[in-house]
Amino acid sequence: MSETDINSQIARFVSDLRSVSTFADLPEGELIWLAQHMDEVSFRAGEVYGRPGDPIEHLVVIAEGEVQFERPEKPGSPVITASAGQITGLLPFSRLTNFTGIGRAVLSTRMLRLHKQNFPELMQKYPELAQRLVGVMSDRIRDIARLENQRDKLISLGKLSAGLAHELNNPAAAARRAAQNLMGAMNNVRAASKHLMVHSFSDEQREAALQFELKATERASARSEAPADPLEVSDREEQITSWLEGHNVSKPWEIAPVLAEVGLNADELDSLVAAIGPDVVGHVVRRVAALITVFSIIKEIDNSTRRITDLVTAIKRYSYMDQAPLQEVDLHEDLENTLKIFGHRLKKGVTVNRQYDPQLPRVCAYGGELNQVWTNLIDNAIDAMDGNGELLLHTAHDPDGVSVEIGDNGPGVPVNIQSQIFDPFFTTKKVGEGTGLGLDTVARIVRKHHGRITLKSKPGDTRFRVWIPFDQPRPQNNSQEGSNNE
Image (tube, rainbow, N blue to C red):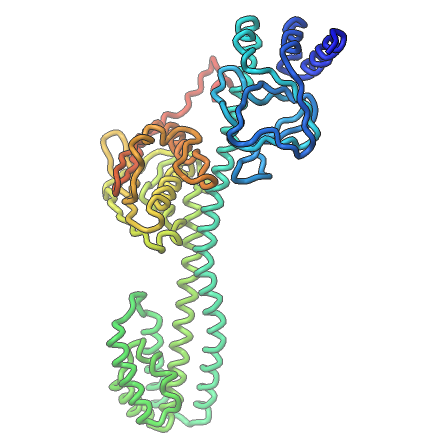
């Protein structure tokens, strides 16, 4: 390249650098030095300029175009983008050594590059420029942390949403199914009533039939959620079936199970026959069986909708919706609300061992944020046990604060990485399964509460212990500093 060409290139590079805010007001001499030590590379739209494992050796200034950095496990999903006028690549004091993802040109792109071998001279000759580049690196780290933190929150939100949807689906489906069954049961009541209307009843017979009906439906309404002894119910059903057959009641197998479930027996049926006579007893018991079914279905709908209401209430309390951010919270209630959200995962093989301090006082906290701590720790514990094991929830208090331990009997955290477990971006999960920000987020929230978190782990016993003081220091308004305080 001739001297004229070199001078033309340097002038062009200087013009490109002038368009970058970091370099815009630098003295001409510094810009010329940078231009003299830089080279130029170009990439077509879609072309890959870096793959996982490739060395990172240059400070890069995007002169034209746009590039993006993608995760290797999710090609096409950009994590970071840089366009014309921005600085990327290696920076002074950065510990980057290799690409951890895929660097790709989004548009036709031209880059100016400064090799890392020039960094020592740059920092010695132009310390102000070096300081600016360190500031760029700090901004980049902050932006990456913010993006990853948002991504981690979205992942957590996705898990919570999926869990809540799963939990809501079961009672909603049960309520819908019960409502459909209710129509059939009402048709059976109507048919039985129609048959009874052709008979003439004395006042005594009508009263006896009504009392029998009331007794049966009251039992249906008051029936416990706990299942009855199946052997006892089976014996009673067999006895009632024989009784119905003996009294020429058609299709006794349809109504015997219903009557047996509410505890009716042959003696009570004999009393009914004695009061109303054998001619209409079949229609009476069939109507009673239909009404028992109606009451049972209504109770099922009530239970299902109550479950939905409980879940909605739990998520509102979990998020502290429409409540002040800093308030006194009941940690036991918060832990239970968090467990409700994980209900579908706990049912698959996780038992919860609650060791709650019955005298645990309330604690002043940012309730919604503190629940993120319990969510992350419980989620990690379930993952560690592969969805099958014992989840420990232990609470206690001392004169200054309260502690919550969340543990599991999984394989444990290896000793050699326990000191890194709360570091940003550190994760023990497989590629694509974790961002490494879950426990970092937990630690930051605990620090925000002026508390502390510790880990003790060995195979079969891993415990995260969170300690929170009773009272949180509140910001003090200083009249001299005014709005400078936040």
